[in-house]
Amino acid sequence: MRTVLILSLAAVVLAACEREDRDYRSNPVTAETNEKIALVPLSAGPGGPTEQRSGLGKDYEENAYHISQGQRLYTWFNCNGCHANGGGDSGPALMDDRWIYGGQIENIVQTIREGRPNGMPSFRGKIPDDQIWQIAAYIRSMGRNVPKPAAPSRKDDMSPGPAEQRRPPGEVIDGGQIPPSAQMPQ
Amino acid sequence: MRRIGPFLVLALLPLGGCQGWQSALDAHGPAAGALARMFWIFVAVLATVWVLTMIALVLALRRRRAPDADPLATDPGTERRMTVTISIAIALTLVTVVSLTGLSYAAQKVLFAHKDGGLSLLVKGQQWWWQVTYEDAQPNRVFTTANEIHIPVGEPVLIKLESSDVIHSFWVPSLTGKMDAITGRQNQIQIQADRPGVYRGQCAEYCGLQHAHMGLLVVAESKEDFERWREQQISSAIPPTDDERQRGMEIFMSKPCVMCHQIRGTDAGGKVAPDLTHVGSRRTIGAGTLETTRGNIAAWIVDPHGVKPGVNMPTIQLDPDEVQPLATYLEGLK
Ligand SMILES: [Cu+2]
Image 1 (tube, rainbow over the protein chains, first blue to last red):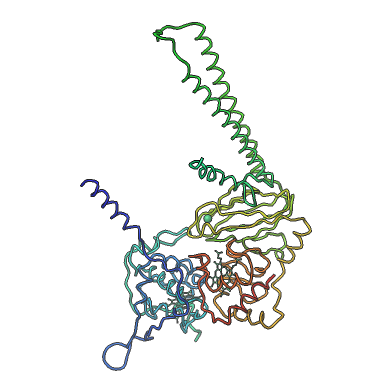
Image 2 (image 1 turned 90 degrees about the horizontal axis):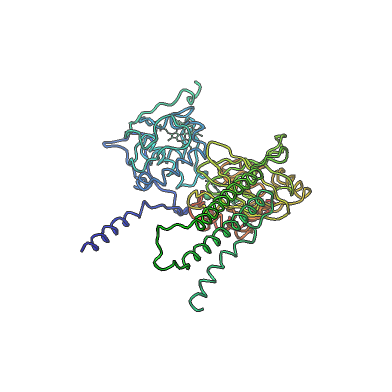
C-alpha cells in the first residue's frame, strides 16, 4: 500500500515534466494570419466597428518561449533604435498603457506588419509572420499585459526598471501620444 | 569470454576518441602539448601510487598474525621499522604533491603565456554559432566571418572571447585548453598551431538546445596561404555573372534574409547572423552541422529547424522555384 502511494506520487511529479509547447517549426506558407482590425474606434451605425480576431494571439501571449524569442528579436530588428527599451525615443513609448493604434496583440501585429503613417516602418515581408507575433507578444509583456509566469525575467543588459515579470499588471487605454520628434513639421 | 567480450569492446571504444581532429591527447600546439604532458605525468604518478597502495594492502591482508599474540606488546625493532616506513611514506607524499604542483605551475605558464604581436581575433559566442572578427590596425582590413578560423602556422594568435547571450566556452582540444565566453566581459587566450592541419573545436559550456551543434574549425596553414585567404575574405562578395545567380541574389535581397545576414558589397546588412559574404568558401554551414554543398544549403534554407531544431533562423516562405537560384547564389559566394 505504502509503495503504491509513493509510486503514484512520483508519477504525479513526472506529469509536471511536460512544460509549455515550443513550436520551433512554424509553417511559413499558412502563417500570415487574416486578422481584421479597425483603424479607428468609430463606426457607422450602432455598436463598434466590425472586427475579426483569430484568437491566435493567446498562443503567443501566454507562452514564455514565444515572448522571450520576441525579446531577442526586438533588438535584432532594431526596434530599440526608435523605441528604446520600451520607454520611447523618436517612436512612442510601448511600456505605458496608452496606445495610438490599439494595444491588443492583433493591433500590434498589424502595426508592425503594415507600418503606421507617422514614421513607423512596415515590416511586411521583412520579418516572417510568426516572428511578428512573437515580437508583439513581447511588447504586450512590457506593460505586463500577459500572464505573470509567461513574462520574461531579468535579462543580462542594464534595465531601466524591474523585469517584465515583476511589473504590476497593466491595462490598455486608447489614445496614445505621437512623440513631438515623430510629428511632421507643419 | 562470451560475458566479458562485449564489455571489453565497450571499454576499448573510448580509446577510439584519442586520435583525430578533435583530441586533447593529439596535441598540435604548445598549450595543448603542455596539457597532454601534464595528463600523462598525472596518469603515470597516480597509477604508480595506486599500484603501490594496492600491493601494501594485499601484503597486509595476507600476513598472518602470530596466534595468541598480546595486542599491547611492543617490540622496539618493529617500532623502529614502522617509524622509518611511515616517515618515508610521508616524505614521498610531500615530494609528489610538491612536484605535481610545480609541474602544474610550469604548464600554466605555457597555457596562459602571452606573446606580443601577431594576429588578434574577436570571437563572439552566440546561440549557436561563433562570430569571428579579424582585427587590424587599418579599419578597411577588418572583416567578419563565422565558424571557421584560419591561422598561420607557428605564430601565436590572440583570441578575445565575448558572448552575446549566455555563457559559451571556446575549446579546440588539439590546440589549447578551454576558455569561457561570458556576457559583459572579455576573456583572452592565445593559440598556436605547430603543424598545418584542420582542427575541430566545440562549445564546451552547455548553452541551450543546439549546444551540441556549436562547432568550429581552426585551419592552420602556411603564411602565404593564410595571407591569400585573408585578402580574399577582406574583399566584398563577387557580383553574380550568370542569370541564375543574379536571380538568386534578387530573391535574397527581397526576403527577410537581409534583416539578419550581411553580404558585403550588397544591400544585405544584417549583423545578427553569420556573415555570408564568402559562405561558399567555408567548409561547413550551421556551425559544423552540414558540409557546404548546394544541396545542403538548399536543405538548410528550406527547413533550418529540420537540420538544427530550435535554431535562431526562421523558416521563410519561398516558392519552390526560388530555392535553386538562392542556393546556387549562396554556394557561389566563394
Ligand atoms: Cu554551448
